[in-house]
Length: 300
Image 1: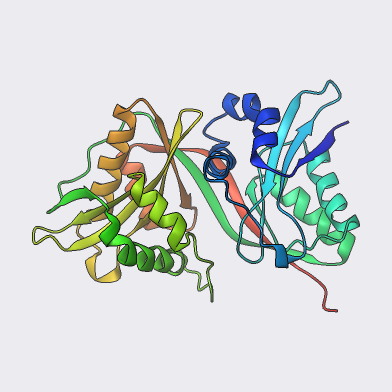
Image 2: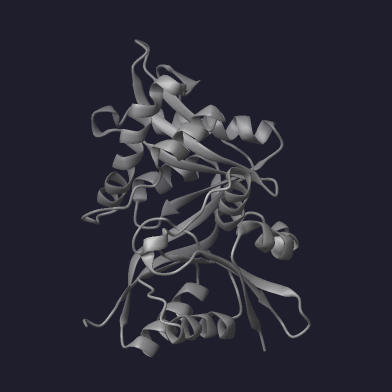
């Protein structure tokens, strides 16, 4: 028998779940990094006008040990849940609890099978249906393989690069979907201008520029949480693809993070053979499969 423990802020959540996150820092990377950023910046999550509040979830077993975690903090529609691994009975109970308290759920992202169990339980309770939007793969590199040489160089982004970085971050979602054979009509923005400016100031955004000094690619990373840094996003505009810029940039950023003592991971779309091939050649290997699921609610 498990129990669900909701926390309204990152501080309380981390106080309860830090040891659990640290025990599997790669698998916990998204929740851990978002919690750390919100704790550091004092930022909120879901907007007030969404009709429900942000929350953080700790799952405990009968002995009171933490056996799962999750969050609902994404500030964009459909305000998806994000779940880490947890017992299936807890995932199902979460779906039913959210339905009982009238909290709308349009998407559930994170580790399989927890996300599927939760989404199905919620959909059954409200008369909805579940479909898969993406299957993601979390990968980690232990022995980095050098990338093929690419012309140009890597450089850290500066304040003057904010406009370009923001445009490219906004373009990333649609480009990644198209490369995987999907055509999502309006992929959500992955970064606001304010949050991106903070990441640039913190040295987390890098451009690859060609020999003439023209930016041709951007790679970002999330700073280490419990010793694990996460690469992303990785974006090359169409007109600059095919020159090895992405592989070179990811390899160099990964090398810098590894040299600093961090473990390094990233997400790939399981349907994107191009990016999966790039990362495999660099030495990235699968850790866990995850999914982004959509819940279609009944009309009315």
